[in-house]
Length: 205
Length: 179
Image: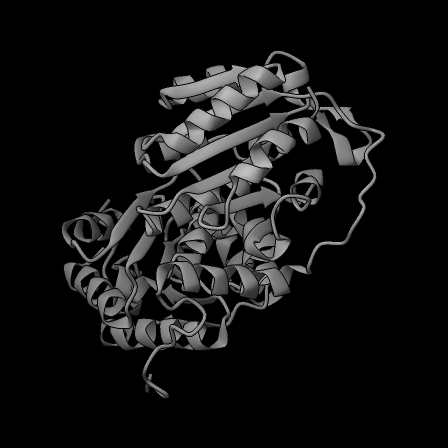
């Protein structure tokens, strides 16, 4: 199973009323075939993807939030799984595309190429709804369940590296995406994000 | 931490509109977290390291919250990557409240190292900050910093010195650390 094949299944299901966070790698580029990149927060640096999604899910408990994380990104800040499990947002789903490599850094192995089992780690952290999948049929079923449930859920998709993949388009810049993503949330939620200014013009200190 | 400082912090955060707080407690800030947890207006999120707290605050900001991360001086170093690669890069404002261990007058022998790093790191990260060294300054400084950050779309910090934390050497007018 390759990531772009799994995104052929998941991408069209990630409708605009679902909030999506990805890391900085190829996932965001591949997802852009199915979803406007302007409404995906696609620039979560190492260790930040699931943590940002965690905060967003807590802030908007009635909105589905999906983190499309990677093994290298998640391993960098693995403790986030424990923090999420201890304060579990019912609206958060985490998909980890685990290709056992730092693909953009020349496909050098991550710890999951060795002994680390991310689904076992997640369960041990206290995330109860975790599935590891290795083929497209199982991925489709797990992704459907992830989107349907009203509880914290995680799917670890064991995927192959894709050395042949070439990015076909540019994504919007990071600052631009901050504004478009925030505006998207403002429209969905009818609440202010960017324009939520403090009232006082000057506070003497 | 002095009780009146705890109350000033809580009141300052509330009056500034902060409603989402991440924390990893240190030896001084435990009473702040107990007080935060008693206040229903705060979503209080314990984290295992400060970079998780910073990034969770970024997510909360996108959700319309006014987020704050309470970060020990050591944790400021730990969170530097995400303050840079997430907050700055995305242009998302969060508020940092930092109990300033290692300020001159702090007698904790393991904390002096942070006098070398704390303010210089904030400057290097280009995070504007204010220092509160009197209890009566705590609330207005927090309110001013949060308001500026929200309007500037920039992360802003407040340092609480030993005088307000209650750890300043008695020779300079404070009281010794009780812990």
